[in-house]
Length: 446
Image (tube, rainbow, N blue to C red; front, side, top):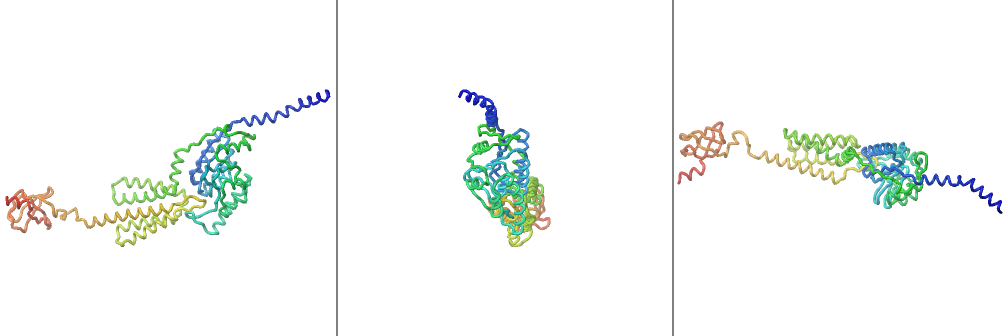
């Protein structure tokens, strides 16, 4: 028995270092601190979000971050920007984790591709993902032939991404071909995403349990060991995101045209021209980036031109009706979106059309009123003006009206005296016909 015990002790001493080493290595990996950069994407996917992701990844690489955590809530966006973001995510060495949250958030249309391209994906309860079918002008379904071409192109991109991340390829295909959309719980069960996480801290805990590959080593950690650094967008991103809002671009474009119109109508006002030129340049810059349709822009310009012509031509309102109709139709087809980018709300289009209609009706009223108003220049401007007698003999003399000396006459047999008040009744060439003021009559009676 004593010999057996000695043999067991010797075997234990020989193999003990091998048994302890893995545990010691795992403990070292478990104790590692993880530097995490945190980014929020809450708007439609556009060149602004594209640039935001690129700058964030660059900062993460420069600062030595080991994980990029993105909170996503998007209705979709531009196909070109989505493709660029997916390509960037697939080619960065920095692991990217996307959390669709909080409750009520969604990853729709273009957002589906971002989730598919992420290293880790999680969704909060009461969130949704899906509806990635391409749509056309202002969110309407496009033709069957064009839709088939776009779908095949999208599926080729999606197939490689989903297979690389080992997710449910069949469901992602349905999201494109059938506009499938599911809740967070179903997404986890169908392996669309890996985790169901009510918070980003819970998401980090689940990533830590599974393990994060950093420089060839798998690290296990808890959310308490993660140093989260929020990424702060710069002023350029905020300005670009504001400009690329379709409603803002639309108002800038119309406001710029209106400002230039009023400047040309009233030269010298300066402010409408400067303000209009600035708005027009910003609006045209935004429209050059957003997917606009030439027909929409031309119809809007035609509508505004017809409204301007209405001010010069008597059409009994026909040009106004045609202009408003052209403006509404152009606004409806102004943007051409493919991946769920938010189109112009109908209330904005109708409100703008109503506002333009009211504005031009007010201008027409002022023009008509100015046409019926007595002329304020020339001899006719002297009619009904009051003045006083400078000199008078019989029925002729000189008077002073508005600081000017005029020859005057009267058909009455009144004998005027210097200083008497008179009223101009008519103008005949350079001679004014005058009448006696009531004040002179009262003076004589007294």
